Image (cartoon, rainbow, N blue to C red; front, side):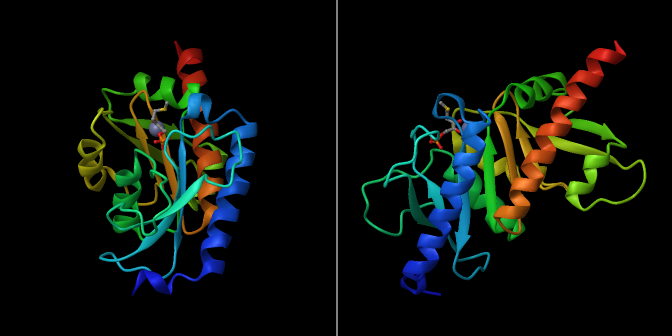
Length: 214
Ligand SMILES: CSCCC(=O)C(=O)COP(=O)(O)O
Ligand SMILES: [Zn+2]
């Protein structure tokens, strides 16, 4: 595949989808202090060569401007000369796309995802038992038990990116970074959003339940 094969309308469609989800999640306060990043894959996919649209780094994600997104390749390099810098965490997106073949990845920082990541840091995963919203991950068995993986957070993003492969768990479309935030993905933006919302619900539940049990 050549990146010139990414049609203008495909790019515009990806940017428009990102704008819609960004506006919606910003209204929930899920991008405090310019945190968070979003991406959607464009064009064909192979683990060796792919491209995606991603939020530009350091932007206020609660504001929409004409220069919020850009296209990058599978190693996170911009495909076009726009002067925009891709998200500082683009390499994490690259690894998730390469390993899962997913179509969209959403990352947010919230108080509950940070709290729960610290609460269960030593365990290395957030346990959740029998909560109905586990079904949002297409896990339908009764009283399902899941463990949502937690990775350490480092200042150097490549250090985090190299841990992603060992952290991905079958059936769980997300990774929590300790005292940082959640990465949730899905086959497309609709599914990634459903997964992200389910994670956030389950994190708040897990945190509150741990306090109640004490
Ligand atoms: C002030 S948030 C620190 C960086 C971060 O964790 C994040 O999600 C936003 O980084 P980006 O480069 O994507 O704006
Ligand atoms: Zn972040």
